[in-house]
Length: 305
Image 1 (tube, helix red, strand yellow):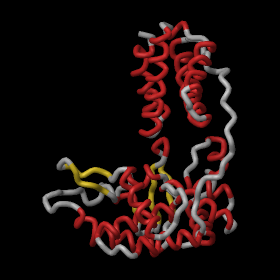
Image 2 (spheres, one colour; image 1 turned 30 degrees about the horizontal axis):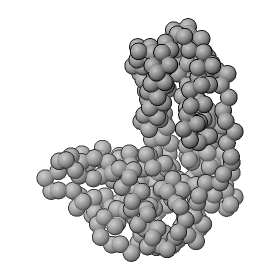
Image 3 (cartoon, helix red, strand yellow; image 1 turned 60 degrees about the horizontal axis):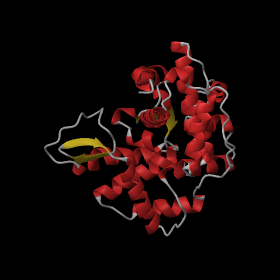
Image 4 (tube, one colour; image 1 turned 180 degrees about the vertical axis):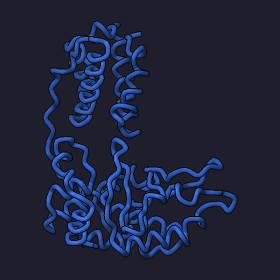
C-alpha cells in the first residue's frame, strides 16, 4: 500500500476532535484521501516519497477526467490539510503547501425575489395535510433563519426557546448560534409540535419530549431525521405548485434571505453572525454583537419579521 492507510485513522480522529468538522465535510475529506491513495497505489509511490510533482500529476489527472475548478479547489484544500497534518505529526515534507488553487469564476448563487418567496410560501400554505403543515414549517424556517439544510434536519425541540423567541442552531464545528424568530413562526412551530408532530409517527413510537428531532421520518422500524433528499423533493414539488421555474435548491433560500436582508439595509456584521459563517477572521470581528443587537437588526430588516 501507499502508506496512507497507516495514518488515515489518526487523521480522521484529528478532523473530528480537533478540527470538529461537520459530518458532510468529514465524508468529503475521507473520499478525497481514498482517491489519493488509489492514485499512489497505482503509481507505486509511498507516502514518504510523495513530492509536489506527484500531487500535480494527481490533480492533472482529475482535471483531465473533467473535474470542475470548484471541485479541484476542494481536493487541494483536502491535500493541504492532510499534508500539514503529516508534517506536524510525522515531520514529513509538506509538499502540498505550494499547491496553487485554480481560478474560480465568480457566479451569483441562485435565489428567489421577495415576490417569489411570497409565491412559494403561499403554495406551501395550500397543503393543509399533516405532512403539508410539516413541509410548510420547514420552508418557513429555512427562509426565516437562513440556516443550512444540515442545520435544519438536525434541529431538536430543546433548541427552540419560546420564552425568548430564539432558536439555537448548531452549525459547522458544532458551534451554536442564536437566531431570532418572528412571532408568527414561533406560533407555527408551537402548533406543529403540539398538534401535528406525533400524528406523523406510528402510535407505538415513543419519543423524548425535549430531545426529539423536529422533522423526522419513520423507516426500518426507526425514527430518523428527515433526509436532505426528502427536503429537496418537497421543495421541488412546492416550486412547481408556485409556478417558479428557477433552478432552486433548499440552500437557495439561505441565499435569498441574505440578499433580501442586505437590500433592506442590514449590515454585513450582523448578517455574518446570523448565518453562522465560519471564516475565523470575519467571525472575530462580530463577536461583540449580542442577542439584543441581532434581534433589533432582524426585526427591522427581515422582510417577514
